[in-house]
Structure formats: structure tokens, C-alpha cells
Length: 105
Image 1 (cartoon, one colour):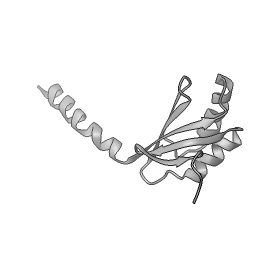
Image 2 (cartoon, rainbow, N blue to C red; image 1 turned 90 degrees about the vertical axis):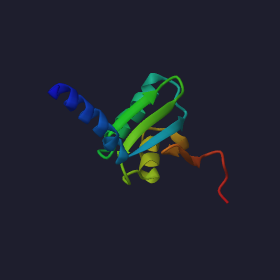
Image 3 (cartoon, rainbow, N blue to C red; image 1 turned 60 degrees about the horizontal axis):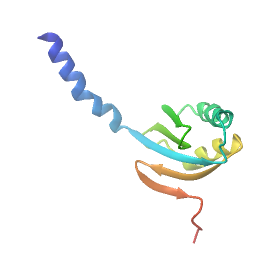
């Protein structure tokens, strides 16, 4: 009985741990191989504010997690460019916040 209560408590608390996180998805232009992705991964890994890095080589999409309020697009842009690539699109918590194909007004 004690173990069941413990499991239920853990299941109830899991969503609370993700409330304090920003989820970022981005696509980088110019990634053509796994070595390109590795260069981006190494550059991103040096940013200690990133909690999780999850690349998808087939779609060229990257999913990142940051503590709430810690994400700065300028920092992400710099890290991707330092690896030799550029940002194509960026989403923050599901909302498109950057698209390199759209002209600035």
C-alpha cells in the first residue's frame, strides 16, 4: 500500500517539474551530415543553461529545454553560428518566434 501511494505521489509531481521549463525547437540551415550535427551539439553543450538537447537528424529539428525565462534567442543564434550554420526557424513553447525567410519590417 505504501508503494502505491509513493507511485501516485510521484506521478502527480512529474508535471510540476516541467512547469518551470521553456521548450525550444529550432531548425538550422546547412546541416548535411552527422558531423555537422555533432558540431552544433558540441556548441550547444557549452551552454550550461540548456537542460536537455535532443536532435532529430532526419528532420534537422532540435528540441531544447531551458529553465523558465533563461532562453535567449541571441545566445542560441551565436552558438549555432559558431558551429558554422545559421538558424532557419525557432519555436518557443510551440509558438514560432523566428523565421529567417520572413523579411523584417
